[in-house]
Length: 119
Image (cartoon, rainbow, N blue to C red; front, side, top):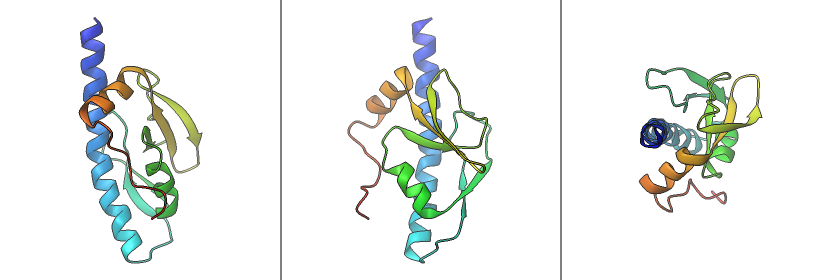
């Protein structure tokens, strides 16, 4: 049973990290072009079939990137099995990985932080 939970947590972390990579490219493009208005970012939830988007300003997304274990999701897409809800906004929520999902992130991406806050 523990192995099955760890597999789920690892799969959830991998799915979220995949969308995180795409969203970082979107954010960098917005930064490069000086966009300050809301942009569409992909939901970074653990649902394999989710391709929904959220709207937030690049600087708001950058603040999420500064926190290693935090991800942006569509409201209602938080999963208490692997994360805790840390912020709720009209257009998006921010979740923080906990437990085995957090450990899976550390194992899959050791010491890999998000972009530094001084950018």
